Length: 162
Image (spheres, rainbow, N blue to C red):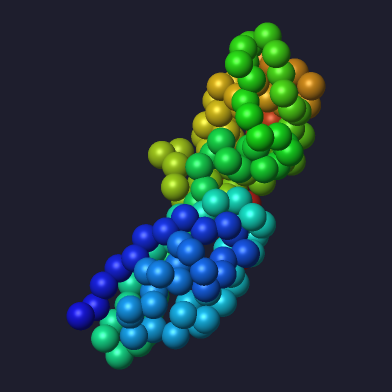
């Protein structure tokens, strides 16, 4: 009786308690081994809610598929705030550096519709616009225009794998 369990867990901080424990308890898997594997795979997300899918077999074997948190959650975590602005074009709640935008874009790239890092960065900037987050101290819409004009092509160039 193989099955699949989906849950949201804090990155690197999953425990055998809820939400995983009650779901995994009736299965043939080693709960502690699953929790340890999830923590190893989600360590980079450091407390941010991460979607995970656990597929298990009758013999106790399992596979874990780790998703990527929503872009807004990554922006909030990186910038250190809990709630976006009620008026995102007037009241800004935080500021990100270009390096932080690039890091979020790299994390999200596999899950986005973007073809490259620059396209992923534009999607991150769009989320910043909605949340009221500036980039390098400027309005995210102005930053996007500069990104479109090629001003940041060096920063967002794809790194070629050797």
